[in-house]
Length: 74
Image (cartoon, rainbow, N blue to C red; front, side, top):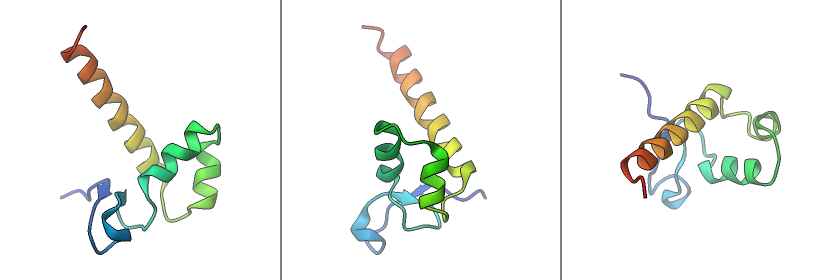
């Protein structure tokens, strides 16, 4: 079985969603990208997160948004 991408546990940062196997909140990546910083800068600052995790997160987020857009054409 493949590891989950994100985990939410009361025992890790009081239940804030983090990248699996780390203590890095997913929100940190979103904050970095929305302020114009790059994936490389994020990875440099949070070396416990892998590039594969970031790419998988972005692909999953994009696919989810596209699916919602197609389901709600208005």
